[in-house]
Length: 427
Ligand SMILES: Cc1ncc(COP(=O)(O)O)c(C=O)c1O
Image (cartoon, rainbow, N blue to C red; front, side, top):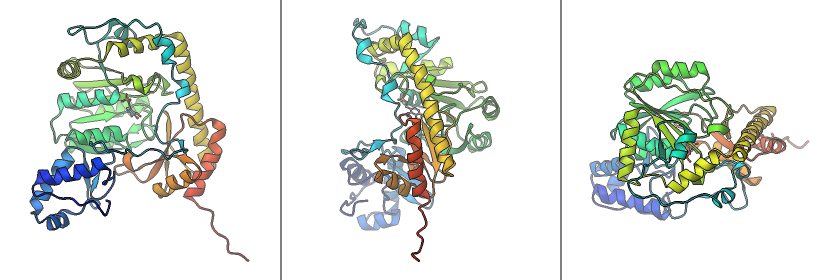
């Protein structure tokens, strides 16, 4: 926390507002620690109960995170927009952001040139027929995977309910769960995804929902095989809400093996972000009828529907043979690039995971030191902190744009950071 930033306030809501102002102004950064309840109560001359109430309000809204032993900190992605969001340092090669390679995204301008754009009016059906035809069956259209996940969780859960999430997992989901006032129950993942025993424990501990990434898991690249999907299905009980995130779709590079089948409430959200482009903000939501009806009903009270322009563009891209050929090339390139990076890391004795998707996850003893060392070579990678709950330190390297020949020097730089060469004493 910036030494200059003074928290203030006499009531819980004033104290909470002063923390939020600090985040919004950039004086309090993600991960910054807050003083203990006792220290803050004494410096503000209020009771510890008042401070505890302020922190609980901030936790409920996803601004701060409290962990046993490490106290309360500003969350990694607090639900208050800071005026100056952190960006990769100017000039650094960005292997931190998890983006697809823009060279494999379709040329939108070419398709937009002759896309019909009739006005749609209030009362028209929320889903365009041409999109339902390519995506298949009964579905809702939402603004991306995360929007779909939020809508499904909100359709079934109450603040305070616990949601089992993958650990390591995507901060988008972890932070969203917190911002919805839900409890995060981290469950260990291995190279085949969430571990059934861990899920069983979380469910016995009261978790009412689980969010799974059956393939291209972010950050570790895990992917279900048939046995893992069956193992997860076996511990899921009918009353649990199962949400599955297919954020990579056809560029995941492996089959889709769902754990669905034993719960009454189930949703799959399929995003086009990674293969048609994140700016489409478009995803297809399928699931049981009650879930879809609730999502559609709530959506109709808010944004109404996803713009017909976006739906028509998505449908057109999805059915264009040239686009589908590009997507097939993307899939192959992503597999090749990820595997080349894994091989290069392994050649340097670094065991990384990345069975599918756009990233590899490399355990390291000190993730901030590893990130700094790579930055010194002009490459920005992601520290694992925001992705981890109980998982040990690691870094995430996005391999989407890394050509196979570029992998060995990157792996060498990371290996040197992790195991700096011993200084030999001059003779
Ligand atoms: C696991 C996971 N789900 C969802 C998304 C984002 O999907 P969308 O852009 O459709 O919200 C990402 C983006 O990296 C992701 O890693």
